[in-house]
Length: 129
Image (cartoon, rainbow, N blue to C red; front, top):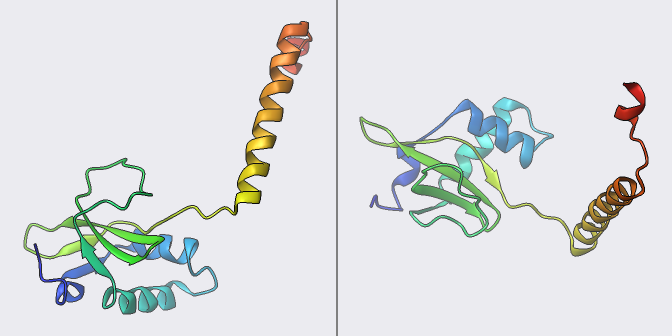
C-alpha cells in the first residue's frame, strides 16, 4: 500500500473526475478553478483500500482517496505507477424531511397507478390506439 503522506503527487485527475467534482460539489467554479481546487484537496485526502459504506458498488475499484466523509475519488492503478482519479463520488444528502416527501410522492404515484389498473380505467396509451 502506498505511503499516504506521498500519495497526492502520484494521482492524476481525469477530466471526468474534475467535471464531476465541479458539477457535484463546486458548481460556481470554472473548470480550471475546479481543477486547482481538487488538486489542493489531493494533499489532504486520505488514501484507503476500503470502499466507503455509502458507495454503491458498480465497478471494481479497490482504492479511493477520501476527500471528506461524503466525497471520494475512486482510483485506478496506472501500469507505469501512480493512480488516476476516474470520477468524483458524493454521498446523497437528502434531509429526513425531503427523503420522506420523496418516498410519499413515489408511494402515492404507485398507489394511484394500481387503483387505475384495478378499476379498469383506460390509460392515455389505451386511448391513443
